[in-house]
Length: 133
Image 1: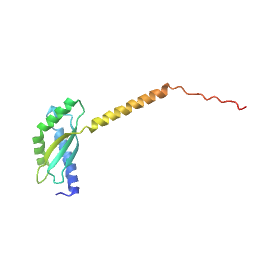
Image 2: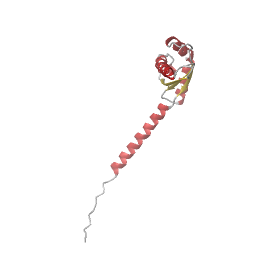
Image 3: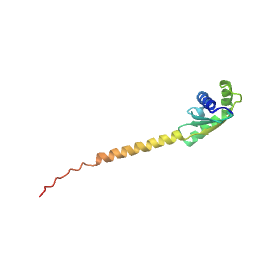
Image 4: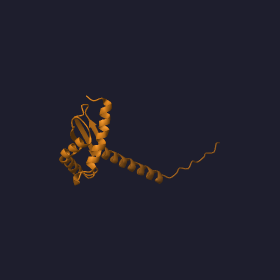
């Protein structure tokens, strides 16, 4: 088993390499794909590639198909670029985090607009002083 420090270094290297490989893919289904994260098992034999793509569910499924179709090429490129005893098996997983973040940002922006509009429509209240008798 590799030390946790080595696993961390390999993970970072694989993240860089996988990002470059995916960016260079010629498949139009994988054009707007971003490698968000990479998980590596302690024995360095399995890798999970987490990707993100903004678009409809159909575009996400097409991107996943494109990446799955290129999995052999991706693995071969990893083998060429990263010195490891065993070339890891690669699992490809969609990560919806960026979509959720974009959705939350949209909700916050809407709430801010509504709050700003409601403050602008409220007329200031004038306080009337009463005479002390």
